[in-house]
Image: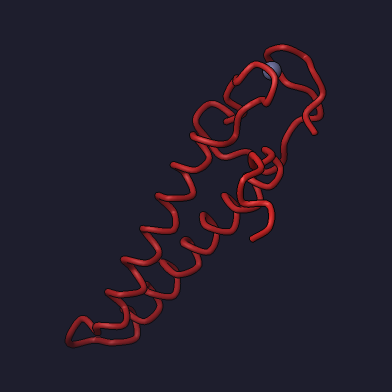
Length: 99
Ligand SMILES: [Zn+2]
């Protein structure tokens, strides 16, 4: 971790947010698949997958709210509370280029 002290750019933040969010969704899907395969009892691995998935999705959303911001004016880059699939080239608030 060489650049631990450098501020995270919003593009890096978006990559991490996507990894957490979609990784979490994937785990939830996997948990759902395991649950639907087992008829009788709730298997422990499915519960673990479910918890990990929820943690991933929630931390992705929290990180998005905290870090997906314009470096110039601090405006949130969330699209109406949703995680954007990609960042705009320019800040919608102050119009400066996002790098
Ligand atoms: Zn801005």
